[in-house]
Image (cartoon, rainbow, N blue to C red):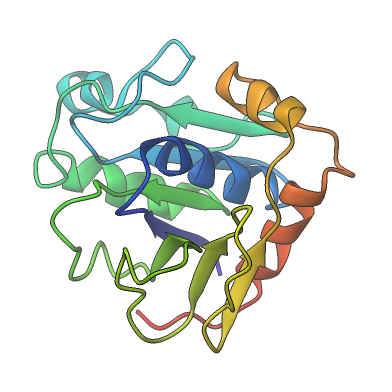
Length: 187
């Protein structure tokens, strides 16, 4: 699966970390594109808004090195960025689209949308049906059928991802993301 979209409706920190974890678990060059105009200011020189304004260059459309590249949003909507995103989808082997938490996305660029939900007790958040990725919390909560459970991330992994570095390849949280690339998600 060359591209996946991440939707994290309940938690801002998980919403910032999840696309980075999925991209880092891709096992090669990957690009995270933030489609949320109010999204986090990820480290890095360029933004999606810059590419929309200036047009993507050949160097933007193809991976240049191993690891994870990130385009923070910069204030454009998915509609405004549609042509650029389609061009990026054509060039990158692994691409992660970060979706805004609201409203619930219908479809995005014919890319499967993966819900990433917190496992909290008491029915505070509606889990929804179908497969997804579920972030463990200190509470013991069962994972819905066809769900991928993520262990709680280490402080080291969170710090690395939020400062533009990759966690160690042996990190448990990062390793738990790897199967997500192999699941046949519905579009």
